[in-house]
Structure formats: C-alpha cells, structure tokens
Length: 229
Length: 327
Image 1 (spheres, helix red, strand yellow):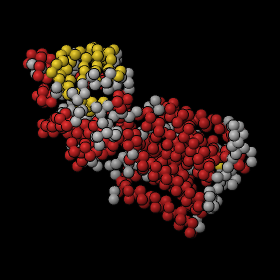
Image 2 (cartoon, helix red, strand yellow):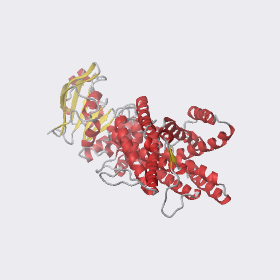
Image 3 (cartoon, rainbow over the protein chains, first blue to last red):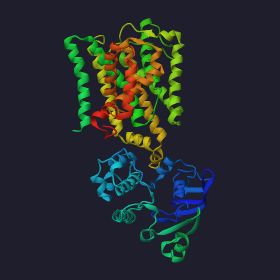
Image 4 (cartoon, each protein chain N blue to C red):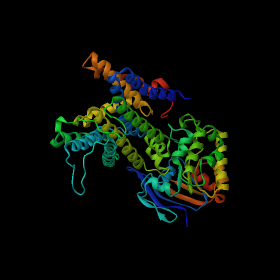
C-alpha cells in the first residue's frame, strides 16, 4: 500500500483551475521527485496533499486512509511534514524556539536535528529572522523533522541558495534517505541532484501527471519535452 | 544579565519598595496608589497574553474585569445580607473569603472567555475587535439593568473581604496580597511565553498556516490563551472591587477595555513587564496630571500617540531596545 497517494486531483484558485488530474503515489521509505516547469502545479499539488487547499475532485490517501478533506493540522499530525517554499521560519522566535514550537514525540529531537545541521546548534539563541537564507532553510527542515513525520515534503528547498549551502542541504537529504526510513517528496530544479537521491520521478505538465517512472528511466527525450533542460 | 531583565527586576523591586517605604513614613495614600498599580498591571498582564503573545486584539477585556468585580460584589453582598445566592440545586451562600471569591472570579471569567472566544476567534482583524467589544457591552447593559445588584449605581461593599492570617483593612497588607498575585500572574505569563504552547501561539500570530503545517490547530491554542488571559484579568477585577469596596457597571464599559489596552501599549506589547510599566506610568499620570487639570486623559492620549508613532516597544521597548519579543 502506498504511504501517500493522490488520485485524479483537481484544484483551483477561485475561478482559475490549477490542477486537472494529478496522480502520484509514494511508498514508505521511498524518495520521489516531483518535477515540472514553473507554474505546472507542483506547489499546488503539495498544498492539496497537506490539506492546505481543498481538492475540487479526486482523492488523497495516507496509508489507505482517505484524508482528502482533512484540515492541515490533522494531516501534519498523521505524519506529513512540510518544508514550505521560501523557507518561512517563525521569524520572531529563536532557532531553539522554532524547533520547540513544532516538537512532537519521536526519534527527532533538538539533539538529532543539531547533529544533522550543526550550524543550527551554534545559532540556537539567534532569532530566525537574523539567520542567513541557508540557515533558515536548515531550520525549516529541522522544524519539519521535529514533528517526527513519516513523509517529509521539501518544496524548493535549495532555491536561491549559494552553491556551497545547496551542497549541505543535499548532503542532509541524502543522509535522511540513507539513515532513516523517512519517505521524501522532493520538488527541486536540479535534475542532477534529484537523479542522485530520488528513486522515482513524477512529472507535471499544465496541472496533470504526464510521466511517472523510475529515475533511471528518465531519458533525455522526457526531460527535453517536459522540463526544458 | 540582559538589559530588559535588569529593568524588570528594577520595576518589581520599585513597586515593592515604594509602598513599604510609604508604610514606614505613614503615607497611606501612596500605598493605595501602588495597590492600584499592581491590580491594573495584573489586568493588563491578562490582556498582554492575548494581545501581545497571541496578537488577539481584544477590545472586550472589560467583560472579564467586570465579571471578576461582580463575583466579589455579589458574593460579598449576599454575605452582608445573609441571604443565599441560590438554593437550588444546592444552597450557594455568599462569602467574605477572598480565596473563595477569587476562585469564583477565575471560573466565571474563564467560562465567559471560553464562550466569547469560541464565538469570536474564527474572525480576525476589525471583526474580532468589534465582536469582543460587542460582548463587553452586552455585559455592561446586563448589569446596568439588573436592579438587584445595584443597576446603574453599582454596589458598595462596606467591609473588605478576609484573607486568612492577614488584616485586609491594613493598606500595606492588602498591597502585599495584590503584589503577590501580580507576581504570580507574571510568572504564569513568563512560563507560557517559553512553553511550546506559548511559542506556537507566537508563531500563529505571525502566520497561522505555517503553524498548521506542523500539526497545531491555531484556533485551539488561541482559545486556550484567550481563556487564561480572561481569567487573569477577571482576578484583577475581583481585587479592584475589593480595593474600592465598590463594584459598578463601568467596570464592564468599553472605556475599561480601552484603558487596559492603553496600559499594555504604553508599557510595551508582548513585553513581560510591559503591563507593570504601563500601569505605573498611567497611575502616576493620573495622580500628577489629575491634580493639574481635569482633562488629564488628553495628556495620556497625546502620550499614547507618541508611543504608537515613535516607540512601538512602549516604555520597556524604549529602555531595553526592541530586540526580543518576550523575556
């Protein structure tokens, strides 16, 4: 049984429809890359999966349980952690407070987050607003991990970061894959890095799933056609 | 030690030292002023929890202040007349015991805050302000039109209520009671600000959706904060009624809600000791300027304007800097 499954999802922002039929399935411990050009519906898909936006049609299930109409906080409690686009830490709180505010019991705690991102430990009493972009991103990932999710969704986690910092984030993602049984749904522009870490890929085009398959099967023809790379 | 911590310690020590000194030199009036500061500060500590930490601009905290006041008034009135408040399903007598009065004030204001919060916390911005204001005014008109408890004229309670082991008619002893409760209120507020609950509350103030993605329902934590906030302000209402030995419907009026909010803003929104600084400043201005002109509130208005325009962190913010949201 899939951990998270989206079947025939349609969604709209008011009158303008963004998703016309998104299918996506992700197994426990699996790393799936959600790809597509800008404006193809990746973030909307994630918002629907997390309960932050209602689906107009289709079904979202988590371990077979229908969570289509669940509010975001219940989806999060079920075990879906989100690292939203654009970092978005709780700016007025310190690093430590950001982590504490999200904490739920489980193997991830402040110590294990600090082990994954030593820089956060150094900055623990600093306010989130005063961190660099990369540090804020680490904090956003750390905060999502503190909820002890079974699925972690990363929406453009490396966007706008310096190459060195990107490498640090990718290393952390690779570690999460290798050392924990955490399932990951990753949205990112870097095909090279995704190829290294993801097991499978799902490609969206104009709000529809147009290609699904193993990362190894993702040939030039597909990437040329849908990703424009 | 951080600068704000030093300022806070100074405020706490000053508020204790001045009335003790006044007690030694026999200046009873100064003790009463300090007691007023402590009580108003406690009311504002309550509001600061909702307004400062939660970003909930309640313009109806007079409801809880008044309920606390009337909890004292009604219980003491029935104790004065030896007639029970109700006899069914059980006999509920009036009392002159402060501890019982406080418990009733806490429960009454907590229940009211829960009810009002459940109905208003789904709204935000101007709607939330108006909805809380409307509930405050409902209580005001209810008590204005309730002749049994004094109606528009309010009720005088001739003898101050009792506290075990203390003589509450001695101004310094009453001050100590109020001061201790203020410190307890500040301690609760300090603990909440650093607990995961309080952190989530502050996070929700900034962005509710982000809080939901970590599995927290903003409505629930806001409601909890609103109830605790209302209870603290309710307790302050009971103390104020005891200090004045009088309760009247003006405790419920929107002026009172505004006044409590002014205390918070003058002192510094979301600052732990903001309410103490605000209440001290307010009572001092009332005392000094009230002697100079009947229109002293106009000066407070001007000061409030200056604070809002130029010193957003209030008195504490101006002295300690704007760095932290809480201490």
